[in-house]
Length: 181
Image (cartoon, rainbow, N blue to C red; front, side):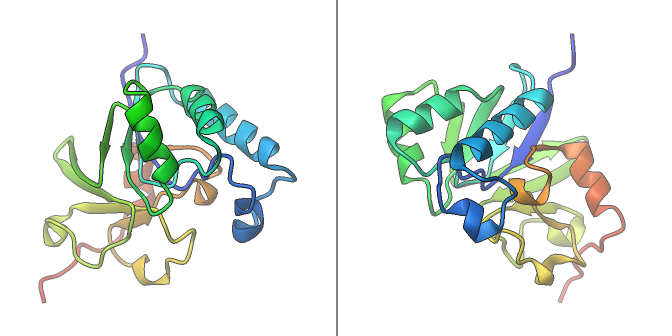
C-alpha cells in the first residue's frame, strides 16, 4: 500500500465560468476545466491522502459544487478563501465533505513548519527560522515572493494538480530564510 501523502493546492475555482478568462486557463469550457482538474487531482491523490486546499475551491451552485468536491480523492482540509461562501454552506449541509474547515493552519512535517493561509503574508510564524509560507489568492501575481520560502500553490501555477510537501521543498530550494529586521 502506498504511504499516506499530504498535498497542498489552492484556487481550483471549480464550476467558475469566468475563471478561464480571468486566469487565461487553457480550457474552452467550464466543464472541460473541471474535468481536467478532477482527473489530474485523482491521478496524483489517493483516497487515503490528505489535501489542504487553501481556498476558493468552487464557485457554482451548491449541488454542482458538492458533486465536484465529492469526486476528488483524499480527505480535504479547506482553508477558507474569499470565494468560499458556497463551500461554507456545503460544509454545514454535508459534514463529511471536508475533513476540516479552517482559516489558517500550521503543519509540521519532517522538522519543517508550513504556514498555510489563503492570502500571502509578508511575515509568518518562524519565517526567520526557515518556516515555509504557502498561499493562494493572487493567481500568479507574486513578484514580491521570489526571494523567500513563500509559494503560491494555486492550481493554475502547477499544471492544475496539488503539490506534495517534497515538491514544495524542491521548488523553494535555494530561497532565502527571512532575516530578522
